[in-house]
Each structure stands twice: as structure tokens, then as C-alpha cells.
Length: 316
Ligand SMILES: Nc1ncnc2c1ncn2[C@@H]1O[C@H](COP(=O)(O)OP(=O)(O)OP(=O)(O)O)[C@@H](O)[C@H]1O
Image (cartoon, rainbow, N blue to C red; front, top):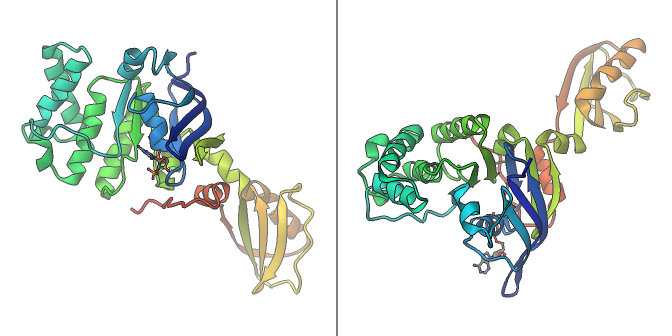
């Protein structure tokens, strides 16, 4: 199967700044893929090279097998982009903006009108179809840039921080809409500073740091690399921390804190049952057990340490 995105040794230099420094990445067709990284890691530059807004300084980039420079039109026609910054023609009613965009991609006028109505309904701003972009609220503007990305029915939808600064309702609407698109086969590339968003939506995430890809894994696999804390309360507190043989090398530390046993371990959910059985065998009566998992956020911060990270937990 041809990959949706195939990038190797991608480089971009702006004057003194090496924005991309040999980034390599494959995004499989049909996946919901997250591109994470601290501010300035090169995410927007990466996206802009794919859509032809920025010329690479070196390396290769293909979209569904089409080179983004030599087969520009084919590559561009496959992509719908909802950019971080709004760059919309402000003087026309939004429905016309969509029709112009469809026309630019070779879609006949009748079909363009139908598609414009359809995508405006899907993003929930059909009643604003005759309004100029400037007169939409901030949330409606976000909805509109998504509609504009969808008008060409792209095989690859690229969303550059689609939920930055939007309210809870809109965030959920956007999540539902893009999940549905992905279920129907659209490949999604999402950049986000909301870690919970990546955790919830993405099959795989790539972590970009200082212009190169430092990791590609599922959110679940990344979280398994961090350490979890298992806190166990007993009917009668032991006088010292029991020595544990369970855990198969997963346990990193065991200590007694205020009468409770605190076990630091990788894959806490996997080792906890063995620990419980061992303590039970030794006659300790357990009254409560709590596992706090490492968050993807903690793993991310550790991997990109030293960078100015502003990754956030989604507020809702
Ligand atoms: N047109 C430009 N001219 C000069 N430097 C640029 C230009 N565009 C980006 N840069 C620099 O390239 C680096 C990567 O920027 P980029 O916008 O790709 O990062 P990002 O990961 O998208 O960041 P953010 O999360 O803040 O959006 C930064 O140091 C930025 O200042």
C-alpha cells in the first residue's frame, strides 16, 4: 500500500534557523496520526512543505506517492489543509469562497455548489453561508477552515492545531467529525498542543524535536515507557516495606509512606495483580489499591526536555 505521507531526511533552513534537520516519517494510509512537538520544533514547516507553501532545502517528501515538488498538483489535490493561521478571502460570502476553492481544484460549478452546502452543513454553519468570513465568530472561523479543507473531499486531511482556543462544545464537535472522516477512510495528520487530544484520537504519534523525528509510537506504547505509581493501603500497616519478588523486573522502587505501600513500576496495570497476590499470600489484608499512570504528557516532556514545551492538558 502506498503511504499517505512518506518523508525522508527532510531539511529546511530559514537563514540561520535549521527548522527541519533530517526529519523522516511514514504515515500509513487510513491512519489517524499525531505530530507532536514543542513550540518551534518544525511542525508547521513540515506541513507547509507537504502543501507547497514552503520549499524544502533537502530530502524527499511524497503524498500518496506524488513528489510534493515535481508532482505538485497531484500531491496538493490529495490534501485538505486546515491551517493554524486563518488565510481566508475576507470579502466574499463564505459559500462563494468554498465554490472558488473547489473550482481551483477542477470541480465543476454545479457540483461545487452542492459540495459547499454539504460541507457547511457538516461543520454546522450552513445558516451563515452568505456571511463574510470576517463577520464569523472565532469558533465559526475554525469550523469554516475545516469546511474549506473538506470541499475537495481529500484523502489526507491535515489539521494544524484545529482546537486551539475553542470551547468545549466545538472541540467535541470537531473530534466527532474528524473521527467519522477517519472511520470512512480519510487519513488524518493532526498537530496539537493538547496531549489529551492526541491520546484520545491518534493511532500513532510522532514526536518532532528540533527539526527531527525522535519517536514514533502509539500513545499507549509511549505511556508504557513511563513509570506508574501503585499505592496500596492495608487494614493493618506493615512496620516495614515488604520485599516484593513479583513484577518480573518491572518494579523500580518500593517504599512505605504513611503506612501505605507505594510501588513505582513500569506497566503498573500489568504487574499490580501479581503484587496483590504476593501480599495476600504473605498475610497482608489489602483495603485499597490505586494506580496512577504516567501521562503521555510526562513522557513527552521527558523526551523533549530542554525545549520550551507548552503542551497542555485539554480543559473540559
Ligand atoms: N518564514 C520563516 N522565516 C524564518 N524562520 C522561520 C520561518 N518559519 C518558521 N521559522 C522558524 O523555524 C522554526 C520552526 O518553526 P515552525 O513554525 O515550523 O514550528 P512549530 O513546531 O510549528 O511551532 P509551534 O508549535 O510554535 O507552532 C522556528 O524556529 C521558527 O522561528
